[in-house]
Image 1 (cartoon, helix red, strand yellow):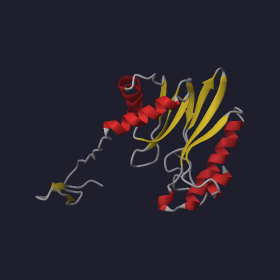
Image 2 (tube, rainbow, N blue to C red):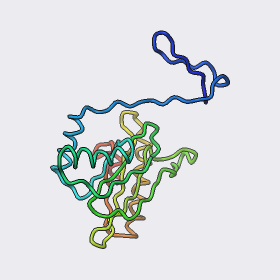
Image 3 (cartoon, helix red, strand yellow):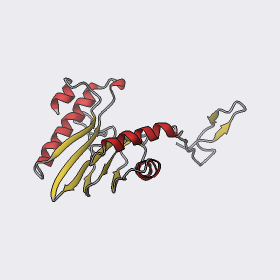
Image 4 (cartoon, rainbow, N blue to C red):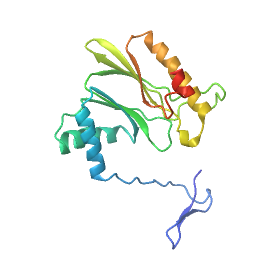
Length: 197
C-alpha cells in the first residue's frame, strides 16, 4: 500500500491514506561500531578457514566490503577471493553468505520451497542455499542454514525446515559424497529438528 506521509511536530511519521500520495519511505540502518566489526574480522582472520559460512548478513556488498575493507584493509590479512550471497526470504534483509578460498562453481536456492502443511507459504525463513565448491577437482556442497528462531517459538516450522534440509542433503549426496550442513540451527543438539539432521 502507498500512503501520504506527514511528519508531526514531535517528529513522528503518520500515514493519511493511500489515495493522496504515491511514493515510498526508505528505512536506514545504523552501522556497527568499528571496533565490533574489527573484532569480528580478527576472529575470522585468526580462524583463517578455507570456507566460511555467514548468517545474518545484510547483502553481498556488505560481505564484500567486510572482506576487502576489514580483513584485507584494516587488518592487513588475506581476503577471500570468492564471496557470494543470495537475497533470501527475511524481510529484514539478513541473509546467508559464504566466503571461500576455493572456486564457488554453482549455487542453488530454496527460497521458493513451500511447507507441507502450507503450500502457499515459503518454508525457509531465509533460504537453504546449496553452494558447490571445487576442492582440487572434487565438488563440496555446503548447505547454508538459519532455521526459524526459538524466540518466536515455532518448533513445527523449525522441524519442517530441518526435514527439508535433510531431503536436500540426501539429494546432494547423489552428486558428491562431500556435503556439509552448516549455519545456525536455532535449537538444542538433542531437539527434534537437530535429530532429523
